[in-house]
Image 1 (tube, each protein chain N blue to C red):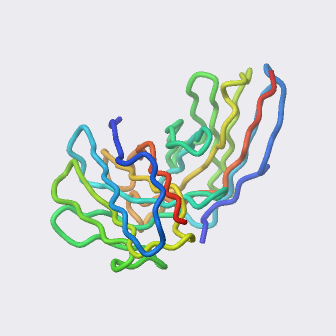
Image 2: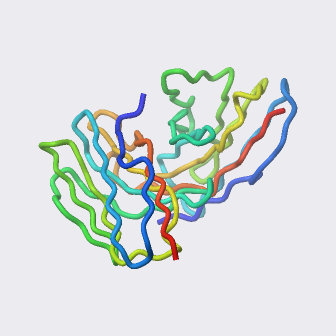
Length: 112
Length: 116
C-alpha cells in the first residue's frame, strides 16, 4: 500500500502563477524526496529533505516538511508551461533503508 | 548523481512470453532497486537488487515472476516472466549512491511494456 497521499490529484494554473502540492505520509521517515515525471517517462529528482530539516530551496522550488503533521509541500514559483508534469513525493522510512514509498502524485498543468 | 540507462526503452510482447530488462549505471553503487508503474498510477517497489546474493522482494512480488540478477555493482536485469496484459506497465530501475536511508535516489528512463 502507498505510504503517502498527495493533493490535489490534479492542478491547472496559468503561467506565472505559483503551484503548491501537498504530500502526507503515515509513519516516521528518514527523508522525503520530490520527483517530476513528464508524460510517463523516467523520474527526475527534484529535492531531498531530511526529517530534521524544515525547509529547502532549489531555484524556483521550495519544499517544506512538518514531521509533527507528517506532511510536506512543494511550491513551484513563477510556473512555466515546461513545468507541466506529474509530481510525486516519496518517503524513506527508518527500517527500510533507501527503499522508497511513493505518494499518488499530482498532475500539474501550466497553461501558457 | 548517477547516469542510468535501460534497455529496451519499450516493447510489445505476447502473453505467456518473458522479457528481460537491463539497467546500467555509470558508476558503482551498492543499492539498486526495481519499481513498477502501472498505467495512470504511482510507483511501487518490486525488489532490491543485491549484488552477490538473491534480490529482496516486496510483499506481492515473487522471484518466479520477477527474477532479478545483479552480477556486479553497475548492472542489473529484471525479467518479467509468463507475461499477461496485467503486466503492462513502466518498469524503472533506480540507484541510491549515498548512505543507506540518507541518499538521493535516481531513476532510469524506464521501460514501457505492453502485453497483448
